Image (cartoon, rainbow, N blue to C red):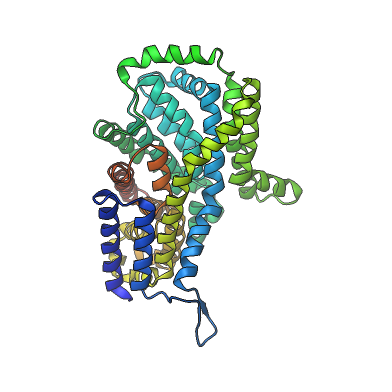
Length: 463
């Protein structure tokens, strides 16, 4: 199946998947894998590996499913495990409570959602949003218990900040690749400036939506606001003495610094052994491994090394379901990418050209919703839009940068079941998939629309 019928088949598949998960309570892993298999067959992906007459090798459906599953594990699986282990150590030693207290003292007890949103926005500039959420989740949970704020509001606030920087601001790979393709890769400082500027409206919109939905959806890790003050003092007493500020921050801050240094080295065009070393240490897996070492040191200083084995075992039991559901989302994305859908959208892009600055946004949003990856949506849309910039009236450096921002806004519209970030946010945020659609999916729609409104307004004045 190709063309428009394939688009219809994809929409039907997504609807059936949502119904299977939310109404019939079929486990997300089975629902996504089943829909992926059916969609792959309907899309005409060969059932076995095939070699065409011109020598081109086409992967069979089983190979596509295997590649999607293993690809997700290789890209984020170890990151999730190490990040969750760090979080477990921070909770056991009381470091998460200490970090939450430091945040409260910095921004005040009345604005924890805003604090977490801004923290996520800054952290996600050098760090992938998936990794950033896993790293900062212990602080989110501790802030929920410290302030009595809605867990859902805190989750949505953190997700908002992380996602915005992920699609707008280099050195995240997606915006860098899009900027290079559009011909403004030599002016990344301008791209970073516009990325920060175009984050204003969606940061505000995301903050209000987080507080709105936080009053209507309850996660399983909500704190009882009426008992927070009492339990906080009791919690501190249970730990005896909380770790110091640096000891508490090191397992989280050190990986962020390593990843940031790696990005800076890449942007600065460094070469040689120093660049190689920074690139190695800044790889998310290695950076989190270093953070885990600092967490183990913290556990030792707290005199709780005898708990390390059980702590690791419990962590693996906790993240197992998250890993498999996330990998299933990767399978769905791979199946769609292996079908003719992206080619069909690309070939018919001229239909949308009259939309001007809205064209890159709509095209990117279609690709994002279809295949799940923001980075793929950014890079693919940039490749389609680049030769059309003069036709769209977006060929000046400033307006090309606005086009890059419009692509970024579309690349987060919307996050749903085929996006690994959806499952990271939903599972670590202690929500069901149905709650995830009401929170993460709708929030990313709000963010994308708010960002596009700001970009459109800027396009009226900037030339």
